[in-house]
Length: 248
Image (tube, rainbow, N blue to C red; front, side, top):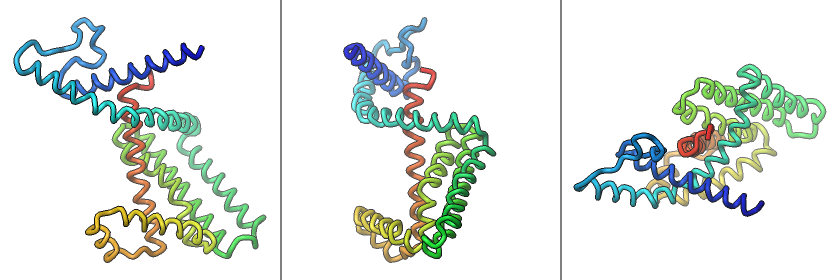
């Protein structure tokens, strides 16, 4: 049983690597991907310098595929998780998704406002309500852009707003609650300081001299973080779809 599983895994890896290399070859050459079993077969140059250029491009693709394959594997994992979310979202529809988040965050707001009243600081209720609004709005925007369909729209907008729905509510809530601020904003400031230290000296000096890291700045920082993180996740899922479409 274990040997069969290992053999199946090895076959899947070989399939992925071969398809990635064929995709690389198709950047410049026709009939490369999945063409071996077709009537015309895989295209190869006949003679001259084209043969050497073809072999050179093939050789260059080997390290590229080796570097990209771990990213593709991560893309498989992210795709699996997002597909599960997408199935649920499709069943609920846009209104259903928005109502679900309204109910969930509304219940949390009600819990803070009534049963836990007096146990949280004075800004706690406002913090949760504002965070709820940010989460609901971001989720609605993410779903709306996903429904529009089209890979560019999904990658450019849906994924970043989905990350915003995760990253931004705690930071926004911390603006209204001293207790949360001590936890969230303090750690956010430490992370921002560490990030500045990793930047080139010229960039670090410019940012320090021209931008104050006040409380609201952390909202902008985490909104800014959400965008590239969303793009990265969208790109790795796109790579996974290119190498092994869902139907495969």
